Image 1 (tube, rainbow, N blue to C red):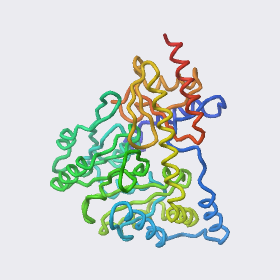
Image 2: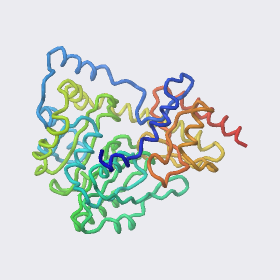
Image 3: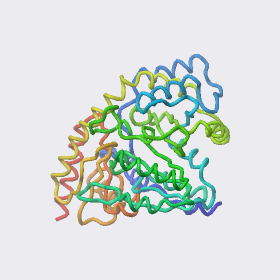
Image 4: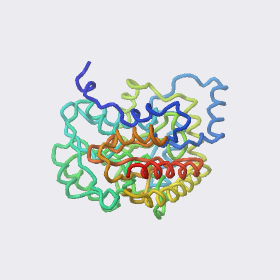
Length: 386
């Protein structure tokens, strides 16, 4: 086995979940997904496709009509993006891995902004890249970017900058000025930007296009920029494993070749479901975002009212990322909360060593009352700690 694989950390989120799965008394908020099922009309599109016998291979880059629909959806949010820049992938995770495979050779210098979902930092290591991390800094519960530190880290010879915003787990979001500074700097250094913008629609600040600032708003079509998206979060399709990439048109043919050697293609019936989802997004996403905002606005004040809690209201995403003062080991703390309080939340150090002592609570709950129950369990547990 390759040493790079042996060296990979196991998922601490899964470690906590495995300690509580199968226990009906545990309130689970550990995974980054809503507990609401995919809307009926999306599921029916897949069922009908299977009934029609669409069980064969598709084009490596995805169904032409789905690529066109995704291009139209993206263009409405960010300005003109042609279908020749779109590739359909088997999930957002697959899209990220394909992008890293496309761009990173063994020994390449890669910079990632952390804390971040651990897959984004693991993928360059799997390919033999040399990873350097630049951490956001917590201030009164809010995680903020030291832009000068990040600009200093990205230098001539840096192959790739990985940025996830809105950020999982912190909810931090890049400002337009920060995006412009990074794009301009990476143009000078010749560095590619891999922008994980999966949570762009889960954004709760006023915005003219209803989503967080995107690099696509300011980049040219041939900038060294690859943007990753997913149907999972804002379309309630986590289990479908459907995502897409936006890239320079000059890269698309090679991306099709790379997809052939990974998954060959996304299944046709899941693409049919995705096609209906993107065509009828106004029936899904605004409602999802409004509900998640209600969930956020319900959970955050209650958590803030607890002793020892340090928390800022997240501008985007589906997570409350908070610190419990006096508890050092996030993984041990999360396991204790499962065992002693029946509360399942993710440990902060799953996302970066710098987030030790923090916890991530996914507030994407169909039943908002579950959030209140969870807070009461945490409150009761804290009272017993003295």
